[in-house]
Length: 466
Image (cartoon, rainbow, N blue to C red; front, side, top):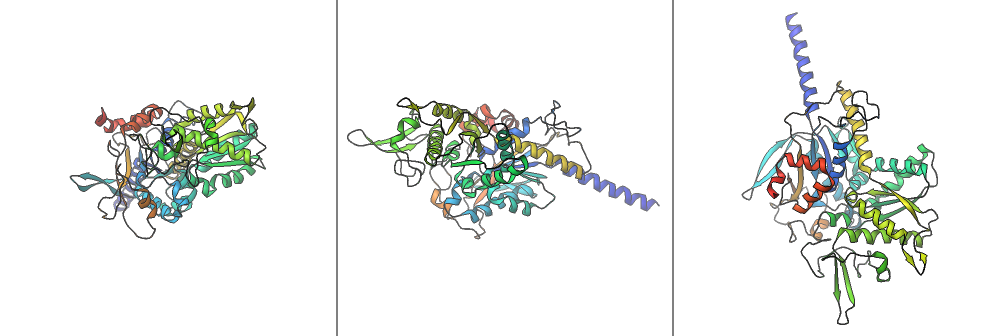
C-alpha cells in the first residue's frame, strides 16, 4: 500500500512537473525580419477576451499576461519575397524549417566572442506564431508537420482574410492584396479569400494584388534596396528604376508618383542637359508611392468595375507605413489631370487598411487557451523571472564561401544563388544587439511598438545605444 501511494505520488509529481514545464515554456514568434514584431505587439497589447471565461469580451487584463516570448528574425535570408522570382522556393522552405527547428527544439543560440562562438541553451516553444506572410503562404503545412500535433501553429493569412471579408460584408468593393512579391506569387491570399468567402455568404469577389518589390527590404535597411549614406546612383541597387526590366519607373507618371526628394530619398543620374537618365528609390515612402500608383494603374488598365475599398497589408513590415499608405491613397483619390480625377473610378474615398496582426493575435490566444485545456489548466503561468528572448539570423562567417556586401549581410547573388539539399549552416542564431540591428530601427520600434520596445528594454539591449 505504501509503495502504491508512493507510486501515485511520484506519477502526480511528474504530471505537475510536466505541466509546470509546459506553462513556463515560451511562445515562439517567427518572421523573416523585424516586421513580425508588429504581430508580437498585437499579442502583447491584446485585450479582446475574458481570461477566465474565454468570452470574446475585454476584461481589462492583457490576454497574454504571464506569457513570455522567443522572437526569431531570419534577417540574413530575407527578403523572402524574392525567392519565388528567383526559382528558389524549395530552398526557402528548407531555411524556414531550420528556423522552426530552432524555435521548437531545446537547443542553443550563438554568442560571438573574440571571433569564436560560445553557445547558450534555450527552451523549446510551446506554440509558434508564423508572423511572416510568405512563410505562411509557402510552408505552413510543412511547418505544422515538422513541429508535430502537440505544438499549435498559427499563420497570418487566414486572419487577414477574415478581417477583409468582414469589411466586405458591410461595404462591397475590390479587395487589394499589398504583399511581398513571393506572397503574391503564391496566390495565397486570393485562394484563402475565395475559400473563406463561402462561409460569410459572399461571392464574385473582386481582388487585385500588388507585389511591393523592395518595400520591406527598404524598411529593414537592406543594402540592395536602400543605403542611408549614398548620394548618387549605385550599381548594386536592385529596386525599381528607369531601366529595371520588371519594376520600371514610368517617367510619364512622375507627377502622379509625387516622390519625396528630401535628402537622398530619390537618387538621379543626369546627362549634360540636366535630364534624369536613371532614377533609384532610397526611402520607404517612395517605395509606397511607386507601388500604390502601380496598383491603381493596373486596375485602370484591366478595367476593374468595383473601386478599391479594402487593402490587406500582407507583409508584417507594411503596418510600419500605415499612415503613409493612408495619406498616399487619399492624395491619389484627389489627384486631378485637366480637371478630371485620375483614379476615382477605381479607388474609394475610404479604404479600410487591414493589418492581419490583430486577428492573428486573437487566433493565437484561442490556440493558447485550447493548449491550456489540454494541459488541464485554465490559468496562465505567471511569469516571474523568465525573460523574453529576441533572436536574429546572421551570416555564419565560419563558411569560407560566404559572400558579404559592405553592410555585413549576404550579397544578393550569394543569397539567391544557394541550392537546397546542401545541408550547410548558412546562418547563426544570435541575440538582438546594436550591431545586427541599426539604432534607427530601434527608434522605429520605440515610436510604433511600445510594448515590444519595453520588452527589449528590459533585456538591456537598448542601454548600448544610449
